[in-house]
Image (cartoon, rainbow, N blue to C red; front, side, top):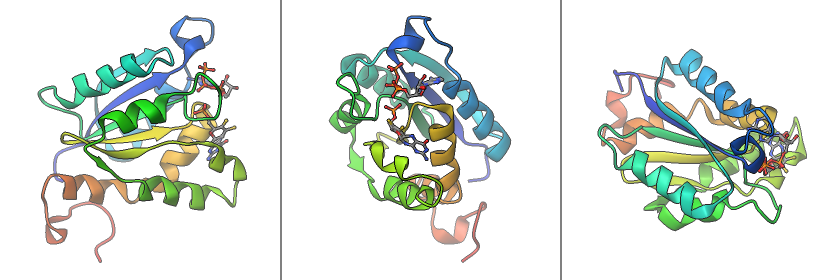
Length: 172
Ligand SMILES: Nc1ncnc2c1ncn2[C@@H]1O[C@H](COP(=O)(O)OP(=O)(O)OP(=O)(O)O)[C@@H](O)[C@H]1O
Ligand SMILES: Nc1nc2c(c(=O)[nH]1)N[C@H]1C(S)=C(S)[C@@H](COP(=O)(O)O)O[C@H]1N2
C-alpha cells in the first residue's frame, strides 16, 4: 500500500443520532486514522441502533467508487437490547475475519476485561475491511490501537498485494 488508506467511520448510537449526547467516538477515530496512517477519511456518519440502516450504510460505502479500504463502526456491540451492530454486520459480511477482534480482546485484556463485553464482528464486505468497535471513546480507541499494527498488512492483502510488496509495518 503506497497510497494512503481510505477510511469511513460509522457511529451507531441512539442517543448521539438524536442529538441527546455528543458523538465523541466517531471524531476520535477519524483523528486516530489521520494521525496513525495519514488516512483519507471519505465519510463519517451517525445512525441509530437500527440494523437495516446500519447494513445499508455499510453497503453504500463498500459499493461506492472509490470504496473505503477500511470501514470502522463504533457502538452497539454490547449486550443491551438495542445493540445490533454485530448482527447487522454479520448479515452483509462476504468473508468473516473474527481473528482480528480476538487479537484486540487479548491485547486489551491486561488493561481491562471489559474488552470481552464487546460482541464486535469483523470481515470483508466487497473490497472493504469492516471492523466493529465499542461505543465509548476509550473502548473504541483502545481496541483500534490494539490491532493497528496488523491493519496495513491486512489491507494490502485484501487488494491482492503479496507479502513482498508490503510498504507498511513489519518487514518479516
Ligand atoms: N459515540 C459516542 N460518543 C461518546 N460516548 C459514547 C458514544 N457511544 C457510547 N458512548 C458512551 O459509552 C458508554 C457505553 O454506552 P452504551 O453501551 O449505552 O453505548 P451504545 O449502546 O454504543 O450507544 P447508545 O446507548 O447511545 O445507543 C456510555 O458512557 C456512553 O455515553
Ligand atoms: N478495550 C476496551 N474494550 C471495551 C471497553 C473498554 O473500556 N475498553 N468497554 C466495554 C464495554 S463497557 C462494553 S458495554 C462493550 C460494548 O460497548 P458498546 O455497546 O458501546 O459497543 O465494549 C467493551 N469493550
